[in-house]
Amino acid sequence: MDTTCIRFCALFLFLCFTSLNAQLLPEDEVKVLETISSKLQNRWNVSRASCMQGMGLNTTDPTYRRIVSNVTCDCSFNNSSVCHVVTIQLKGLNITGTLPPEFANLTHLRELDLSRNYLNGSIPSSYGQLRVSILSLLGNRISGLIPKELGDIFTLEELNLENNLLEGPLPPNLGSLSRLRIMFLSANNLTGTIPENFSNLKNMTDFRIDGTSISGTIPDFIGNWTKMDRLDIQGTSMEGPIPPTLSQLKNLTMLRISDLRGEQMQFPNLTGLTKMRRLTLRNCSIFGPIPLYVGAMPLKLL
Ligand SMILES: *[C@@H]1O[C@H](CO)[C@@H](O)[C@H](O)[C@H]1NC(C)=O
Ligand SMILES: *[C@@H]1O[C@H](CO)[C@@H](O)[C@H](O)[C@H]1NC(C)=O
Ligand SMILES: *[C@@H]1O[C@H](CO)[C@@H](O)[C@H](O)[C@H]1NC(C)=O
Ligand SMILES: *[C@@H]1O[C@H](CO)[C@@H](O)[C@H](O)[C@H]1NC(C)=O
Ligand SMILES: *[C@@H]1O[C@H](CO)[C@@H](O)[C@H](O)[C@H]1NC(C)=O
Ligand SMILES: *[C@@H]1O[C@H](CO)[C@@H](O)[C@H](O)[C@H]1NC(C)=O
Ligand SMILES: *[C@@H]1O[C@H](CO)[C@@H](O)[C@H](O)[C@H]1NC(C)=O
Ligand SMILES: *[C@@H]1O[C@H](CO)[C@@H](O)[C@H](O)[C@H]1NC(C)=O
Ligand SMILES: *[C@@H]1O[C@H](CO)[C@@H](O)[C@H](O)[C@H]1NC(C)=O
Ligand SMILES: *[C@@H]1O[C@H](CO)[C@@H](O)[C@H](O)[C@H]1NC(C)=O
Ligand SMILES: *[C@@H]1O[C@H](CO)[C@@H](O)[C@H](O)[C@H]1NC(C)=O
Ligand SMILES: *[C@@H]1O[C@H](CO)[C@@H](O)[C@H](O)[C@H]1NC(C)=O
Image 1: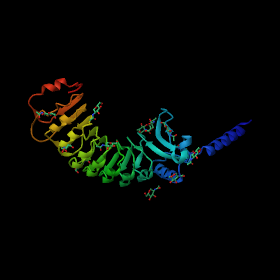
Image 2: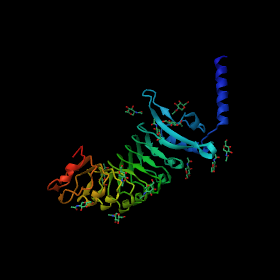
Image 3: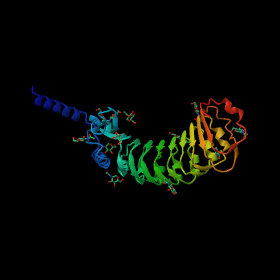
Image 4: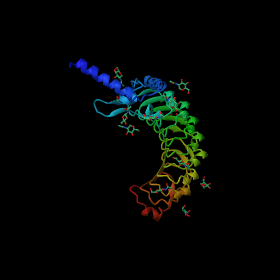
């Protein structure tokens, strides 16, 4: 057989295979993906069969052989005949332009990670329709206010907006994200105080607001976030004292607070924090002795 014939037979078998086991993306989802692709420097070549062939959506850097566009599908819909895109990771790809509002049309998306690109503009309010558990826009040039609609993503467990140009106050609506475990807001020009509604965020394990202009006192209610593992409040506009309720965070392993404004304070009550590995309380106008119980903490850094 000559090569043309081999190619023809291969194509024929492939078509037979695909028609017997067709697991296709819906037409409108292909259109949404094409729209997004065109706004992100033609990242993808999308077809209805993209989930089956693993081509067009996933791309690999030929030099480093690492996956640079990582898209996964779930093809178990409608008796395993329909696929939907469920995760999208486009990390560190130097992508420019504004955030496409059309991501919000991907109703089955569970993860959207656009970390470390050069995306600018503001976060579209349409993202409130997303039903993702992970949303990361870490390390871009995203500006403007955090839209209050993000508080509608009740599925959200991880929100990472670190290292952008966001400004203005934290929307109180974010306090309704009851599943939220991770909230990273460090290195933004955010202002205002931590909203009272955040007292509801009792699933929180890791909260970081370093290098923001967030002000006010550290709220007492953080002591009710009993699952906390790490709390970072360095270089903000916040003021003391450090609330004694922090001593209730028995699972805390890292606490970093620096540059608090306001009056001098005694060493804070950290008696219950027996798992602490890293403790930073720098430039907080603390006076008086360091309590003996600090010596019993399993500290790697003080
Ligand atoms: C996305 O959804 C909105 C309405 O929710 C619709 O108006 C718009 O046409 C959709 N965009 C695409 C590209 O399908
Ligand atoms: C899309 O297809 C065109 C033409 O076949 C090709 O040049 C381009 O590299 C493809 N892009 C991706 C991201 O696969
Ligand atoms: C993309 O690659 C991941 C592995 O990182 C894989 O799980 C997934 O199925 C691939 N996506 C497609 C559309 O083939
Ligand atoms: C692709 O994304 C999936 C879903 O987040 C993840 O499990 C997988 O490890 C990723 N693959 C690569 C190569 O990054
Ligand atoms: C899949 O099933 C859903 C719900 O049963 C239905 O709305 C949708 O139209 C079906 N999709 C296809 C492509 O058949
Ligand atoms: C789903 O597919 C299986 C196996 O192909 C078939 O037996 C079953 O009847 C299908 N169910 C529906 C609801 O189409
Ligand atoms: C991003 O840009 C930097 C600097 O120009 C370059 O070194 C790097 O290879 C680019 N990365 C990708 C994935 O294009
Ligand atoms: C914590 O999150 C789980 C789901 O991840 C949810 O069922 C539970 O209600 C949340 N807890 C609180 C106190 O909101
Ligand atoms: C941060 O916000 C303040 C007040 O709105 C403004 O004066 C300042 O220029 C902003 N800084 C940056 C780096 O955008
Ligand atoms: C902490 O939770 C308890 C019990 O739910 C509640 O009575 C108390 O008011 C809360 N403390 C703060 C400061 O929100
Ligand atoms: C604290 O950590 C332990 C061990 O990892 C875990 O069993 C426990 O549920 C945690 N407590 C809270 C309040 O999250
Ligand atoms: C410190 O906090 C613990 C636990 O919350 C409490 O039992 C104790 O009375 C507090 N100590 C002081 C000096 O307030």
